[in-house]
Length: 287
Image 1 (cartoon, one colour):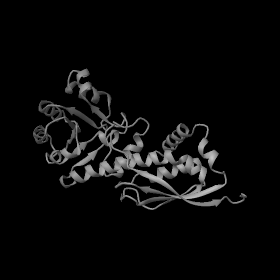
Image 2 (spheres, rainbow, N blue to C red):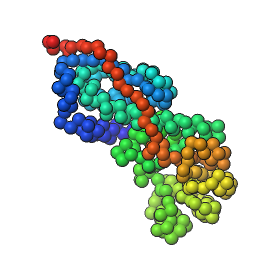
Image 3 (cartoon, one colour):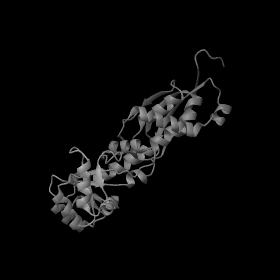
Image 4 (tube, rainbow, N blue to C red):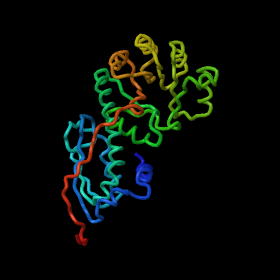
């Protein structure tokens, strides 16, 4: 991940949530009070975002100490401790919601990704994400997909060329769209074409593009399409790829299955922070 960009995103999230101060915490909790606590999983899933939790807390107050109990990408069970946290009570309570939001969101994505990856693994198929991400969270959400064992599709529009149906419509056809791309782009740019029919697949193969996206095809159509695509061209199935359909799609021989809902609809993993009630006064402070 881009560390500088991540820091800015986390700062903005805290600014959004804290505003000019945590009124409740500042009224209830003495400035000198220190506490310890534990972040705990409340359901089974794949852990992602441990370092993000720590960075959020450190931005609120660098004195907060975080001790991971599990590893990134580990499968956790309900009740399992994930992190130990210790430090100024005000800082921990102020940063709690933002830190947990990130961990819950990223762990939810990693969990669903791992489920998809496990289904298609016997067939040598890779699970990829899409650009259907939450605005401002793409880098982190795609990171969570990778933690879950998936691969990342384009991070941004400048990563590669993906000629979709509307591009084809605007250009007047696949051949013309590919011609225009090659005229303006260097030879190192990856070119993928979205197709909806077998005729389009044949055309894309003849043009020698690097990847062919097979959009919203039936299993029978996918099998026919894969038979037309040489191994040197990446074959990617996409469109309404639900967990219950993944195995039969993987059996068609496609190399990649891209899934939009991994990042736009994966449910957050239920995770909470519980303070244990222990109190420690800051050095130099008097009760």
